[in-house]
Length: 284
Image (cartoon, rainbow, N blue to C red; front, top):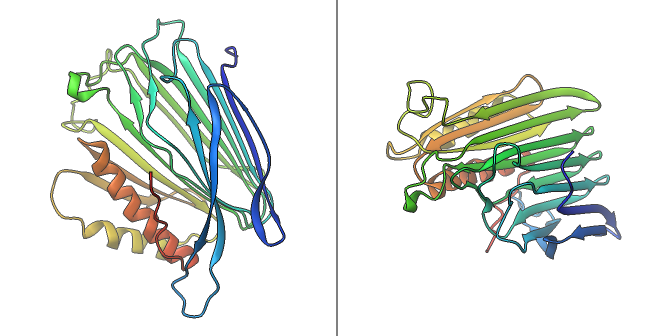
């Protein structure tokens, strides 16, 4: 395991009817910058607003440097509801073959907890080498909504797929059962990314992962209906149910903001269909 260079640990619980941050620890350059409270309005007339705590994470450094290892641990106790994000792109700097950067995230949701984790895009600089892994442990009635957007480099400087390697693993457990496993590996120097069935003419990729035992085929139908209304041919998008209790939206395009716009529309739609909640508007 690489030497730890940045860490966040946070635990949330319901106290006196409100979700609160009951424990936090952070080690520079990572920190919890602030928390703020939402009163989510529902789509149902007469329903009481649903309390939710918003949390901002911050990286005080220029980003992940060669040899850096970030560790992020988030735990939601029963019934806690949290929206989690960060303040800016995660930037990964150049690294030698044997000095890559790593990031490990562990998300634990107890029964009836809701975590909406919507970080800003990941930016891989020229010669960047990143191994990222996310583990999610869900309990009965809990819901995880998680997005990621991958950029090919600083495109305005001509950095398009000039990074060395990107490995991204995601594992999701429900009540101790492994229900989802993704293992993605991209090495632009050895792969023909412009080939049919690969990136072709696209440069950016994004995903929205939804895991909940409430999910069913009707939730996929409303997502597909929403995405089918998108105009233009500048993006490619698809959605499907996973093996168990999961739904994934995939989108590819040439600009991070385009992907974020599509994933936000899908996110807002799933909030309506799963929880009868109006869109969560986040200012940055």
